[in-house]
Length: 375
Image: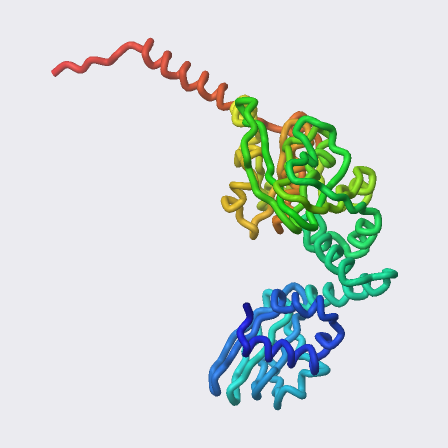
């Protein structure tokens, strides 16, 4: 829940500051996620870093000076930034703020703000858009698969989706079946089950609800469903069929890299993730790989660093495609190795071979004559 003071500041922005004045009520509710407010006392100095683009700086209250690139810009009050915000230099440059009196400033991510404005335009251009359609379109846009896609792809996907009703206890998808659609829950709840890696028992792995999505893995890999989703209440779903998914989503989100190029990229800082089973990894793997089996990836993503860049591989490319999509959705910089390890023409390692070598060395040591010293 927002404080009264924050609500007042946001209301002030929406009424008097461009481009906030261009946003719909629905988009204004999202503004709090893309801006930050800083309160400064008279005489305080604050250093601020911009984003990849030229972020916006607004003065909501007070006077201050902005120092960047050797220049000083004086802001006499809120009116100076209502129609023309200060443009901050992009990262890694920083700006220094000096408060000449008590101030409240607003730092807005310009790229994200532009996306909100653009999304409003997309929605407005669609015919017969009512409050319920607004809600459904926002659920599509905010689902993990669509967050990194161009807005036009989101619009096209929404137009091709079907609305379905699901009853409590119904299995929307079943493990082992062929994948034919991608789903977003627009109301209701469900449970996700998977068979164990080393047994045939169904294990509950997640509870999902409104806004959550499922079904993309089989569409990407071309293999069968790897999970069962069972409704735990009556609900509604949006469904996108396989053909539309492949056309609008799969090719946009999953970036691949040829082994020869990948080899060079590894020399410039990229790291390898092997998403096969541990037995496959032991048999042979690319040197320097991190082993995170695909079925463990969702629960082990905190082991990875979003400031690093990764190349994911499996045996032939199907599992690494799923892993790449999952990591991309969670804001990782990641590529999938074309053809997997079977197409890797360079050196690989085998833990089994290492054991043989080590055991052979031990045997040779045992056979060697002992040196006995005499006094």
